[in-house]
Image 1 (cartoon, helix red, strand yellow):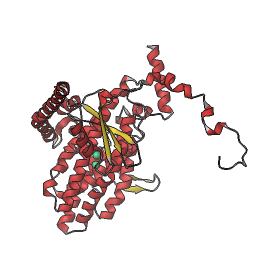
Image 2 (cartoon, chains in turn cyan, brown):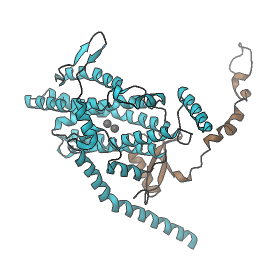
Image 3 (tube, chains in turn blue, red):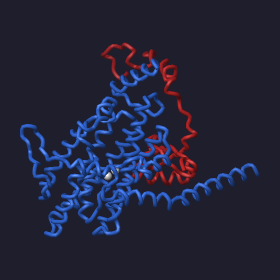
Image 4 (cartoon, protein in one colour):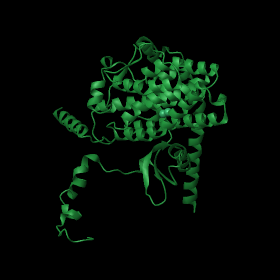
Length: 318
Length: 96
Ligand SMILES: [Fe+2]
Ligand SMILES: [Fe+2]
């Protein structure tokens, strides 16, 4: 017991000194569990996040747009894989994580439970959703757990193209015909509030924040990150000539930040609990991919085992 | 279904260009070495990050124990004379 307390003290002082924690180092059980949960949910978000955008790959308006979107979605698959392997260093298996996603035990970002109804949604997602993700992920490059921080550095290098391709789509539509402008505005209307929800509950409703800050898992609070996103994004909307669907959004000279209206937290919790517009569709798609892929996974393993056995046989035979 | 038939984990090392060493970049799952290299190509070199890939099964890596860090590395801590700054030479001396 006292031994455990001593170890925790040493651990905390390492964190306070800005040292990184590596997988084989001693860590409090709660630090391990929190990381397994957070990293795996982050990984699931990357993977499920491919679905709304994948919906438009075959219908992209030009070959150029199709190549860009395909490359972006492929990157998201890569992000999921970097993160799954970071989580695996803490002792959870890939299959366990998949099980937790499919059973609903593990969550993923609620933003991916909204549908992509028009091509402009692809622009809005790249601009807003990847934009919000970048704010969070840049912070996480300095997180205390080494493998997570390293995955974030790699991911952040790749994200900036995602956001720029999204904004370029919005720019094209905003400078287009009235129908195209309307489409862009409609996408902004639908994705604005869910993007703000990506930063999670208000600080006063986020009981885990204090511990996460102490362990330097997070370096900024939900509300700080949300404010940072709004301050960056509002002028970008102005540049497009589009209107952010929040009548309370206004520059506050005194605070040096934008003021903004109340988020519909009831909607947020509904989507988190599984009642968003696409929750069922997303999990069904992942379940189908998992089930349909089973024979491929088995066959590939059987083939590798057979090849290895043949090699051994020919070695001993000669 | 947990871990009944999960593909083995491989560690991936990439040489970013000739003249530099291979560096550990992360891990992935594959059934054999050939597939591990192909997967590493797709996962870790989508933007020309490499000219050469090494893969090794994670279970074959032998690592030092972080709890024994002291006995392994501390002996070097008090050997300041291994560093050039330990030696007092006149400042007017050049190229040394
Ligand atoms: Fe991503
Ligand atoms: Fe992205």
